[in-house]
Amino acid sequence: MAQLSPHLKQATPVVATHGEGLYLYDEAGNRHLDFTAGIGVTSTGHSHPKVVAAAQEQVGKLIHGQYTTIMHQPLQELTRRLSEVLPAGLESMFFANSGSEAAEAALRLARQATGRPNIVAFQGGFHGRTVASASMTTSGTKFKAGFSPLMGGVVVSPFPNTAHYRPYGWDEEQATDFALRELDLVLQTQSHPADTAAFIVEPVLGEGGYVPGNSRFFAGLRDRAEKHGILLIVDEVQTGWGRTGKFWGQEHFDLSADIMMTAKGIASGFPISGIAARPEIMEKAWAGSQGGTYGANAVACAAALATMDVIAEENLVENSAARGEQLKSRLSEVATKYDQIVEVRGLGLMIGNEFNDAQGNPDGATAAAVQQEAAKRGLLLLTCGPSSEVVRFIPALVVSEQQVEDAVGVWEESLAAVLG
Image 1 (tube, rainbow, N blue to C red):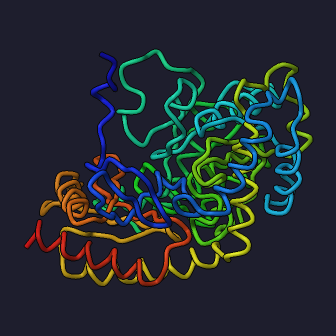
Image 2: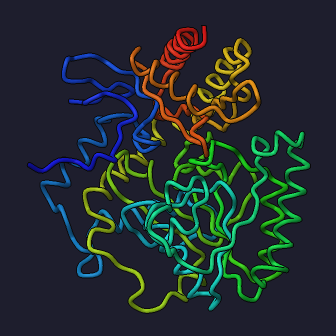
């Protein structure tokens, strides 16, 4: 009898029958407050009526039109509409299905456009599980272990992660100084600038622990990129589409990308991803290097268009900022009661609670225990970080003020049950 792989471990015990807004319902009819959003995917909530209607209408017209064989209207309209929200200068698009595919496409484009072999990734970044994307991932060994050899040409440089450098007593300025000095050393000792195609970086480390970067660090990347003709790839797979309280995470830092990756929140749960690049860069892609059977699926494109409408009409970017401020403030209040929570951090509706043990080491066991207790009480959360020591709150952008309060209430009860 066919069955799922035993390694597909569920983070919660829920078997969902349907969802509505911030809520999932299980087979017994129990309601669960979902602060996972499908790992940041269901940006407009579960089954938003406008997204459902758009998908249903498109299914009745055209389900699949392979976009290097024929062109379809939803893709043309989505491309046109994206010009309203893409960062300045990123005017040329290529579409795929997943974040990993976007990472592979960005890597391929950077190498072809520059004629250079190497990529500099940053410690704690997550870019996917396929061979090339996993080769650039350093948020945890579980994403790349057991199928070496991986792709060559990847060099890793530090990210100014103050959580990682806490044992050394470094603040953000010191961590940033170190990260930029080490990047210069990487370019001197491991990847000559003339061999370096691109830097690839997340505005906020996702799987790496919900750690925001900072403006000085990103300005340093931009300066070095321009000095050496290196491209800057910004991975907005998790941080895009209003997740951080701005439409794109890079907007917090005045960061300017040459190539940007996007996925997750773009279509409220339908699989679509892409890269946006400066036209003069995209033009250098080699003939035949871009394509795919399912990329830019017509139904997914229709859902993405409806998602854009909902984000604009319901002011979801502004709601993300306001509810994110509320959520971070309330979680910070709760954290003051527990020594085990050493930091509450993040931007917008992308907030992490980091757990350490009494010796100051990452405490994934306690984080998991509280996350599981919350699930029993009807609040669905996820963990992240190298030791899974961070419990993350990533609700849909439609979350209300009362739902934030409800979630924090369950969180506080869960902490009390586990930690006393």
